[in-house]
Length: 153
Image (cartoon, rainbow, N blue to C red; front, side, top):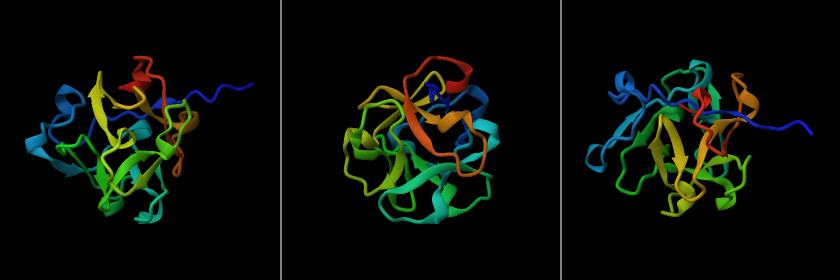
C-alpha cells in the first residue's frame, strides 16, 4: 500500500510581517489578512473562489484574488476566507482528512495554531498538509500527523 503521506503545508510566508522570523499567528488583537504561501511557493486557495460550504481548499499559483486572502489572528483561532472558515471535513481527526471552506461554527475543526512553523488543527493535533507532496495547481489540503520535518514548517 502506498502511503499517502504528504508534505505538510508550508506556511512560512503568511505575509503578515512574520516571514522573517518564521511562521506564527498574530495575536487576537491583531487580525491580519493576506495570502498564505506554502509548498512550491503556491498559495492556499479556495477552489474556483466558490464560497459554498464544502468547497475544496487547495494549492494554486498565487494571484492576489479574494480566494487567496486569509484572515488570521481572530479571537477564535480561525483562519478565514470569503467570509467562511478553514475547516477539517466532518471534524475528522484522521490522517488524510481533507480541508474545506465552511460556515464558521467555532468547533475544533476550525481552530488552528502555529507550532514550529506549521499550522496545527487544535482538535486533531495534526498539521495542515498537501496531498501527495504535490505542488500542482489544485493539490488538495488535508491534515496529517506532525513530524517536525522541513515539510511541516
